[in-house]
Amino acid sequence: MLETGVLVLNRVYQPVHITSVRRAFSLLYQGAAKAIDEEFQLFDFDSWRALAVAVHQDAVGTVGRRIRVPRVIVLMAYERMPKTRIRFSRFNIYARDENTCQYCGARLPRAELNLDHVVPRSRGGATSWDNVVCSCVPCNLRKGGRTPEEAHMRLLRHPARPRWTPIFRSAARRAFYREWRPFLSLADAAYWNAELLAH
Image (cartoon, rainbow, N blue to C red):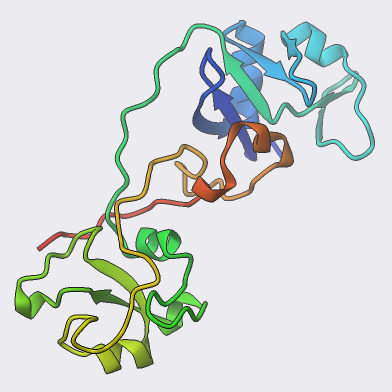
């Protein structure tokens, strides 16, 4: 439980990071952050500790009591957004395209997908966000070394670099908690990982 995720907001309620419950309690105890509940009320460590724990809520046990796990905390003195870019990676392309072939629309397990250069590399096409898409094997074979127009195929959507969001900044934290929903766009909740080399 202590290593599960807690969404960290800056002082103006923008998500900036996901941390562990252990770190969140440390920030609360030091006064660097406050916990926020479902009604958007802020609590310091003592007032949060005094809250009753409902049966359906995650909690950690101490010697004398159980303390409710905060799933969202607000930093009291941090206003900036981290400057981060999304790494160009196979996993991130699959995440951007939602494991869906961008030609036929089939949603498949990653093991059954390829990456396709919209403009083939043999024609000078770059290995970049705006030229690489998910493709199923049959569509990839059908397209071959041609452009989609030459192969009489249409892209579902034109590829582009996705926007960075902090929700899956850490590979260890893939869970999504309902308490995070008011602060995050589910459409942007994608996991971004290891970088590919652009050619």
